[in-house]
Image 1 (spheres, helix red, strand yellow):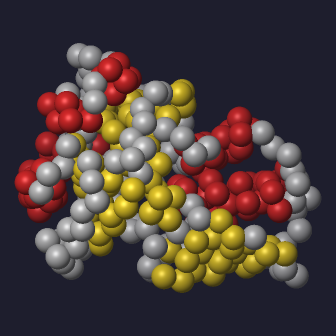
Image 2 (cartoon, rainbow, N blue to C red):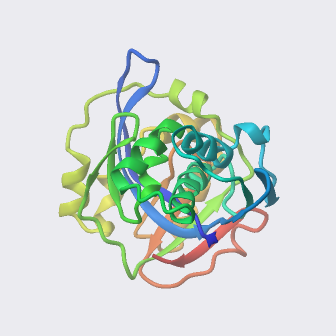
Length: 269
């Protein structure tokens, strides 16, 4: 069985508080984007995981696909599978590629072994893998709160729009991104802004709280955002804690020559 785990962008990202457990409370809109990895799971004599494409950092035992299999195996009599992940989504980009791979491993195992787990149950498992993994259990925009694992519906629809995602050759660690922000309550609810205002009005209304400190330390990321606006983006923003930046456009556009040497994706939403 083969599936295609997509990435996500963040439409707004507000850091609203510091938690007693060391995490931060956030408010954001996760939006799925069809820039996908390729994940295959087939029955096997023993469990195995191999990767191809973009190099996957870390030990195999720490990969979220492996952890997802182990998580379900604790509660179900799963037979061994051979997992093959072909990595296309850039890592360390704020696009949630690894989280998507872990969540889609849960989804593919649910189908492969006829576990009949509901989306809600799968989300509970996914939240044990990572803060934004639960979002990838279903394929629609969601408002994320808490650590990002508390999900509610939001009426945001970018269907028919075009997106360009650019990842500069810069790595921003999540820890350093959080170290540069001061949590605070937003003046206007993100859900209200996104639902009541069209994308062409988001530039001055929808913000990613990580941008100010990250752009200061890595000016190239801010430069990418400015270039997307210069080439006609209705709205542009860094995704997550970076370093990928996306632009929303009204028509198809190819900017690979502008961002030569960077990972770049363009397509219809």
